Image (cartoon, rainbow, N blue to C red; front, side, top):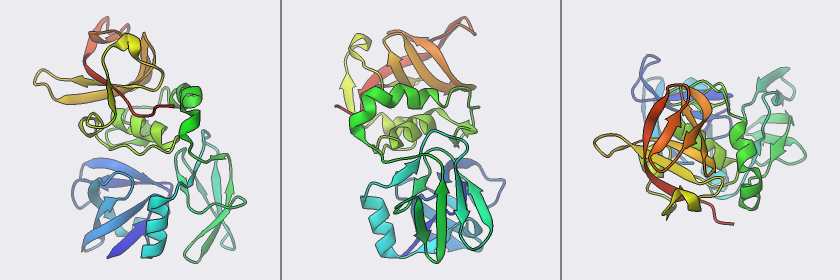
Length: 262
């Protein structure tokens, strides 16, 4: 079996081979995967974090051994915290990378780590994901992404979709959840009424056919942060999301789930 790691700030994971293919999701620096097959310069992978599958350019990753892959998959790793100024220096190579919040810092120790033969020095804020700080910090983490533009398949402050927002916020607290909204709706514990919700609970919305098509993070009984056009705060009630900008309800509430209980 072959394993790899993303060694660039962010790379696309696509539905098919080629740069014109639909982007399904993204890998951030330090995220790992299993290679299922290869076709020319493209790899079909399964992402370790959420089991999502898709195609990546083989030139946008490096291979790692099975031991490193398994350790990174099973042990909590530090991540880049809420800043757009974090950098990695490649020691001895006079090169640097700009990191996105939520990027994994593999085996970080004293702001340094290595991937294969490359040594890195991290310059920025890091955090060790901790569920115990969830209730206290979830609103701050979610608000960090406000006004990020909507991007199908995106997982960063420079472009993100609704389920990508939820997934990356929960990564900050060491709680891995699936990638798509319908998959996320199958996780967690159901909350019967909006009035019982607490900050960080996740609301799911369906279409006329009953399919889960949208998701957002509740910050209080009346407001939700979600990605629709951009990451924004809208009103929520038992009917769904009400957009003051549009002057109407835009999403119909289906279910509320709680992922972290503290």
